[in-house]
Image (tube, rainbow, N blue to C red; front, side, top):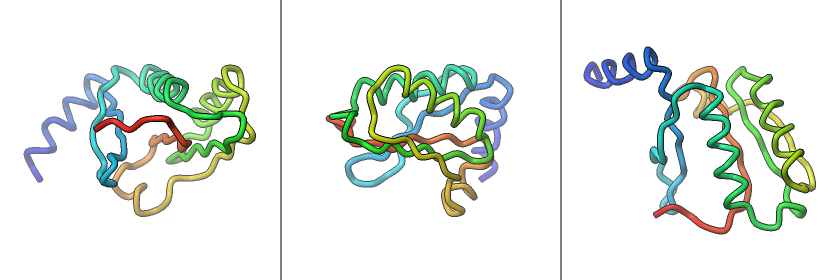
Length: 116
């Protein structure tokens, strides 16, 4: 709606990036916000490092919305920090991508907790 346009515009001007999370019920929720793209990627990485379980046995999936450089950067950070079985990079699907737009970055892994 029109009211959502104003916060979105302010977020763009201030370079505020939402950090999203899928709740236990399967709903997309805002977990936090980061100022600037690099900060958002670093927070995404920190969340993964702090919650991943048995990283050496996992295949990590990174999905992106036409930002392969950011996906490769995140992949390299993960490789430097954790032993993982494999990291695969692919595009965000069309359903999510149509809502999130270009520049979306997501990481999928099995973690040890869920935010309620």
